Length: 173
Image (cartoon, rainbow, N blue to C red; front, top):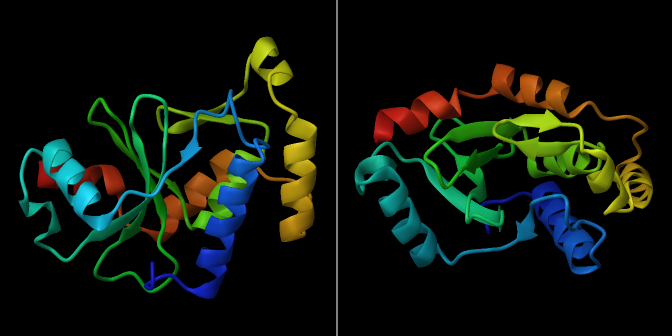
């Protein structure tokens, strides 16, 4: 994790803390999880069906997973000049660019929407009752000094500032 700047490291620690305190829990399908470099390389080899995915100098740090084993990762690509974006590689073979940074991802998680199949969707009435969304939003807003987050808007900004992760992933399969 030594490639991460102070802001990214702090945001990762904050995300981990929110998960450990179960402020982020079901119905948000996210578990803080850090695979070792060896474990992640093995998983990526299976996901891509080969070992050539890293031939262009791209690398990842896994920081989360969902219940199906899909991965939330930080993507380091050769021309990256900012914090690494958050990407999602699902267990069905789809890949999505989610956010410009881990900080933006934490904000998205507190938006009141759920990440599903590359989009942010509104939880159903049961899911709204299964989590203290107000507490999550309050804590994240206070931590980052924000008032309102539109998760889809943050994903759109990420897509303007980073290469297409879906296209990149498809080119490596």
